[in-house]
Image (tube, rainbow, N blue to C red; front, side, top):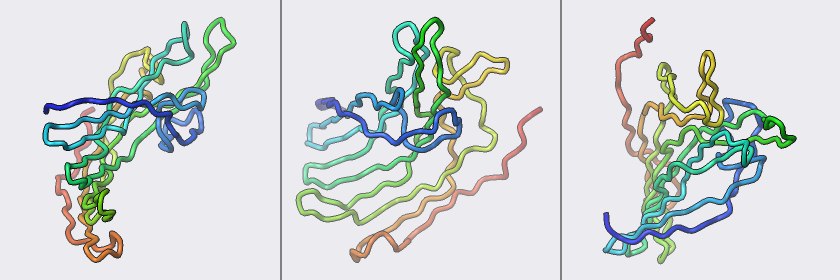
Length: 215
């Protein structure tokens, strides 16, 4: 894909986290001591004028007591919007799993810190049919229903990655993971202008029952 790339900085807006809860899925990563870090939004234009926006970012972190309590940074940007030359808009919506660790005191220092990182993000829905010129709302929506894989729970990561420990046994609380299984896809339409309430088609995935992991 050819075109121009533009990055813009924005001050992030985040939900707050209850520290020390490894199952915390509220809000999003990219914050240290409750302060949202500066975020980047990437925009790419193709030669025909179509604009692609990458605003949905995921963050990870590293133990770095020598300079900061934690060194966190974005490691992935997901496609969030496509706008064609006629201002027709496709919007991509995601859900995410975020982990906020325990309060940590750096050795030999009174500094303490706690960070929030993103372990995973997955498509929740796609909407299209809207137009920014005419003001038309979205007319169609695809909803993805997915759940966490039951047996895919072995993760990898560096021992100095935020949330990870060398063990034994090792833990990878802060490592990225992509362990979703798609259950079904639902298609909604808004052709009558009464909201996305008419389910026209539902596709369900069929798969064999999961096998127990080897012992």
